[in-house]
Amino acid sequence: MKHVIFISHSLGLHGAEAVMLQAIRACLTVGARVTVAVPSVVAEEGLSEVLGNLRGVQIIKLSYRAAGGNIVRTRLVQCYNIPALLRLRRFAIREEVTAVCSNTSVTILGASLAKLTG
Image (cartoon, rainbow, N blue to C red):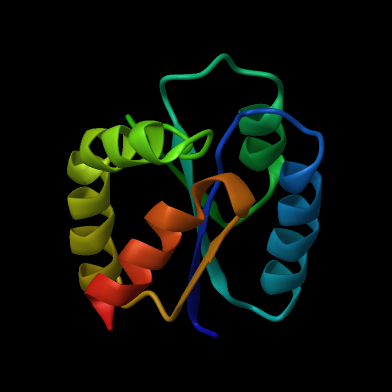
């Protein structure tokens, strides 16, 4: 893996984000470039500060939301996330991202990005 992009669904340090931080650290130890996409539409709960202290991690703040709940909400969130998805796609192609990792609440965004970038 040369360049990995992680997609977070919150800015907290609990649950999936705690696991994501472990994976980020593991990628950094093997020399991979790491970019983390974080939502700008949720309250900060410490994640940005921790990521800022990790050497070699690039943070991208985008306006997207976590999908889930029911099919109607999921479809609405998918539409809302289109601008963020397109920006991530351009970034992934330009920066030659080799892997996309997303935690469970935004797997729709992560899977869509992986599909669009081939």
